Amino acid sequence: MAAAAATTRKVGLVSRGRLFGAFAGLLVLTALVWCTVLLYWQVNDIRPGARDIALYLGVLPVGMFAVAVLLRRGLRSAADKAKASDTVEGDDTTTPEAAAAAAEPVDVAVLAIRAGALRLPAGGNASDVEQAARESRQAGLHGKLKDASGFPVFAAWVEDADAEAGRDWWAGLAGEPPALDDEQWRALSLLQPVARELLERVAADGLLDAPEPPSLQRRREPLPAPSLQVRLQLPADWNVAVREGTRALLQAEASACGLPSERVAFDVQAYRSPTEAWQWLQALQRTMPDIAAPPTHYLWLGCDSQLGERSVQRLQSAGRLMDAATPEGQVPGEGAAGLLLTVADRQAQGQPLAQACGLVDIDQGVSWRERTAQQQVAQMLAQVFARAGAPDKEVVAVVSDADHRKSRRQISAAVASGLDAVDPEEGQTDFGMACGSLGAAAAPALLALAAARAEREQAPVLALGLCAESERIAALLLPPHAAEDEPDAPAGHGAA
Image 1 (cartoon, one colour):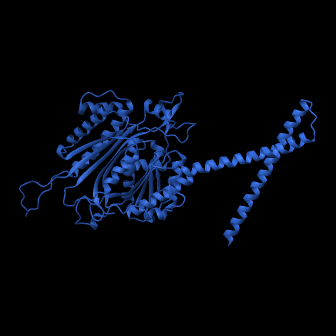
Image 2 (cartoon, rainbow, N blue to C red):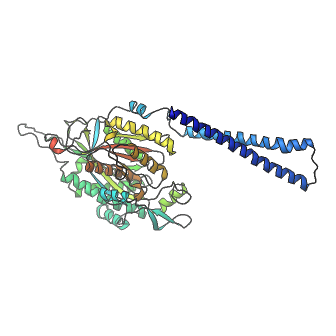
């Protein structure tokens, strides 16, 4: 009753306020019309009759006011229609509960994350990046990069990224380096230590070692051996020759780490949008691993650098470069990231590994208007938790690539505040503020940071990808199982 009375009073106040505003507008318009008409009559020495007075001092201001009211209503109606078309279908009526009910069945598999590696402007490991996010570290003005007007550009860069190091890597493993921009060489210089670290991890853990047959079983032919599939994301504007050359670099790097070439396959992809990468991960999750078959491991790599005139000009010409006139523009960044993954049966109890599950992507109808965006994200998260088969009340942290853009930070903050177990001060990590736009490295970096946080907290962590223009990504990272609770578990499997 009290709430209804308060609502009634509020509606009454709003109605009286609108009536007063309309009356004041009519008075102001009438005064302007009278002053104009009277001044015109006086200057031109016109003696108006009763009809002129009634027409110009009475009908004219009222008619102009009516036209203004109708025009305002028309513009408001057009704006409402545009806003409605900006939302996804059913956005006004679909609740998070309905979205969860309509979500796809729980994934049959999870992605067990064995290791991650990073080289980002905020640091070379998860702890450094989280510290930069806690300190609200931001990108700064670059000393050399200028926009079309000659003003310095805000950018985020890796201090030890070196174009010459990229050329030396190429020359040492693949011969004469091609003619590339410095930003491309910087990206390759960041990729090299990430790829080397994870390939060495594959060798150190013996993931590609041929299995030994049981002592009581005699086999004439050797048992099938595990394999490794390396997927590298490079910017789409890198030509085919460069992508093939980078493939040769990784092949040489794998051989240098002692990995058998016949068990390692390489796939170099042109990165165009986050959705393509996440759809690949979703396809892996929908594949039930064959326990009897040798495991297939996946090395997912991405590198990018926008620290060059070419990228700055491209962003500015598209109206997507952050400056005084475009506060929602992007800040050029650079980095490399990688994940070592194994597809695991979610029902099996396995080796202690962090797991990614409940991957969801939205690639159509995305709005960044605060209210609509929050409705869309609520529906997306309902699907994430439904597919992951995990309750949202257990999530202790939110890791996102939200950057300086208000539209992104609002969503990240709203999600974090809506999860009961997330600490308001320590539970939210928005690394995009310090790293800028990471391009092809953004998705693996996001999962690597969230997996590290889940392992440290021993609790579920929500990962949010918000950096793209028309896509949003969410995934739930579950913590590893305790090894002592599963002494007889087969290696390479994780449970959700």
